[in-house]
Length: 147
Image 1: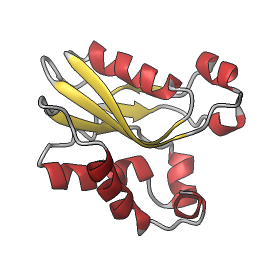
Image 2 (image 1 turned 60 degrees about the vertical axis):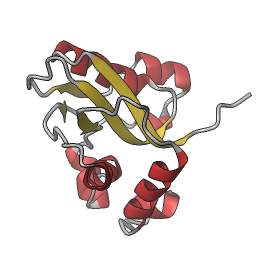
Image 3 (image 1 turned 180 degrees about the horizontal axis):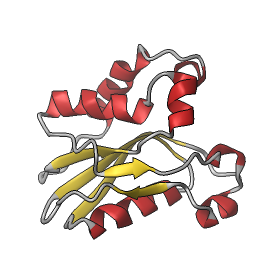
Image 4 (image 1 turned 120 degrees about the vertical axis):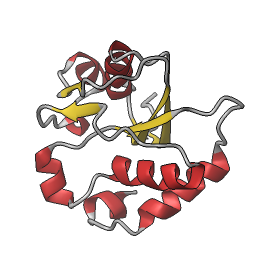
């Protein structure tokens, strides 16, 4: 993961998506739409890609589920990885609604790494405000909580 994100190595994205497909198949009621957590402009310039978006597009192709690329938008850069879990939960993570109609849709948020869940929680609220009836999250990795 580190080599992919910090080493600007996008080649692993397809492999990560493949592992997601084999390790956690979707339920009997698959989502109607996939959505990714958007990266800030600064992060895109640093890395050259958004791993969440890359995973989302690979999963979309494999599962034949459309992506709603504008369902969420990044309004500002937030250096979340430097914050404690408590600070992450209270910070403004810079996400906003894309203002598209998701009425009655089952939406699955695709993300690369879940740390505290605060980004996914805010994203889910924003998708619900756009009419989504069910919102789930599917992440490639989960950070280990400090004991």
